[in-house]
Image (cartoon, rainbow, N blue to C red):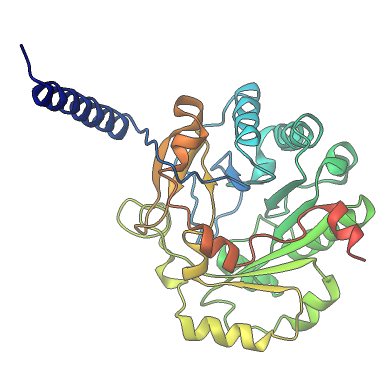
Length: 329
């Protein structure tokens, strides 16, 4: 017969063994259960890596051509909404390259109509956007962000933002006008690098008048645009902190400017790749979680490397819908 002490000892020993077995299982199956839960308020879904441009500093390169079936992607988007997502940002690669924008169009429609997300946004190089697309899907989009790294067309070509005889700047102005016509907020993204570091863009940006002008410092990520396995070598585009700060000071009169240094940018985004895996950039490369389709959103988030404090510090929360912007006037 076991005494009271022996029974107590056996009970707690068994409990400890069960706990350690569960911990081992979760860690080795890509699942972690903890009390501190990340709520994915804002998610960046890079659903394709394919692109028609060849920007030398690209940090999400065409390493695969994979794109989820639309119904599967919608399932994942619904899971994110149920986990607390309020804003979805579709990016790439170039998001308009898949089925000439129809795939993207059906996702923004689903997110706004079925999921009723407060904010649906897109980041694009702008080259494949048409007015017909705006006519079909513009009403489902809150913000359209277009990349423009220079107002000198030759500089854009040196960077890799060019496609034959097409003029990148002319297309940006077309997209800007379509946004105004179809009630979509227009945002401008610029990556500061060695080719545009001395440019003064104040006059042109003021004329375009974006709702936000995001200015990024060129970021190096192992396996994407740096290192032996990368498809790009962005080291020749890289600038130091002092050079980036000088660019910001030159443009401090632009009220819509939102600066993002490497420190602010690297871990402050929830990035979902083409397989719906969160990408952890904390080590200087992109380490994927398992797909939210396999282990759920909450468990995948534990491997996202997301820095919520930095997300807030860089201004991640803002008036990110057309309705919020309308009510602010």
